[in-house]
Amino acid sequence: MTNEALQNLINSWISELEFTEEESQFLNITVKPEQLHQLMSQLKTDKETSFDYLFCLTGVDWNPELGVVYHLESTTHRHIVVVKVKTADRENPTLDTVCDIWATAEFHEREVFDFFGIKFNNHPNLKRLFLTEEWSGYPLRKDYVDEVNMVIK
Image (cartoon, rainbow, N blue to C red; front, side, top):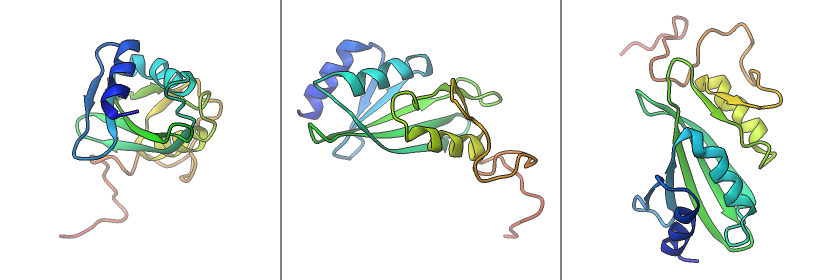
C-alpha cells in the first residue's frame, strides 16, 4: 500500500489528523492526545494496516510541549508509519497507554515516564525504571537543572 492510500484509509477512521512525509519514506501522523488510543488500536487491528510491531517509542521535549513518537511496522504488509502526539499540559503531562495494544510498550512507557515525566493512563505498573523513586525531576526535559553534574561552558 502506498503512503497516499494508507493516509486515505487512516483519514477515513479519524478526522483532524495531520499527515506529512517529512523527507522520509514513512508516513508521519500527528494525532491529538484524546484520539491516540483509538488510532493506535485501529492501526493494529484493521486487516488493511495490521501494524503488529511497535519497534520504537520515544519521549520528546519539543519545548514547550512534551510528546511521544511511536514507530510502527506491519510485518504482514511491509509498511511503516510514525505517529506523533503532544501532551496537552507540560506541568501534568498525560497520555493513554498503548501497552494494552503492544505489550512491549510497557517498558518503553516506563522509560518515558522516568526521564520526561509523562504519565500513561491505565498503565499496569507505571513507576520509575532506571532512576530511584527519590530522584527529583525528569533529566531529559530541556528545562531540567542538574545541580550536581554542572557543565561549565
